[in-house]
Image (cartoon, rainbow, N blue to C red):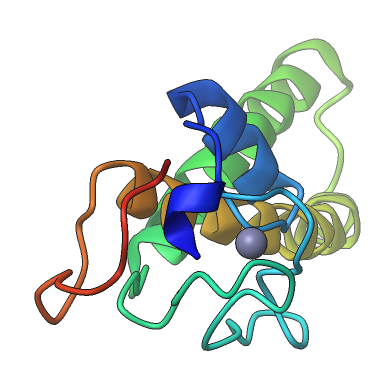
Length: 132
Ligand SMILES: [Zn+2]
């Protein structure tokens, strides 16, 4: 079954992961619910279970959200009229949560695709089939 798939280049696989799709076929959904990864692709049967992203998506999401929100906070403090703390809390906390919720599944899909492209699987990737 795995031999029937054309080779997938690195960036295509990452783009598919970002969209929440199987990195090999681009058709099947990676997630059964918000962040719950499917055990295998419903379209091509790629076994996804060994490609566990663990804490990496949360780390990268925090990194990304921090690099978006913190400069905005500093810019508002610098160029604004020193707004009160309640203003910062009312603005930046919801923005941080919304950004995290938007980015987390996309980053998780990308990390899973990255793991798949490099065959970084646990346990050993025997029998998982090539990306081709
Ligand atoms: Zn698939």
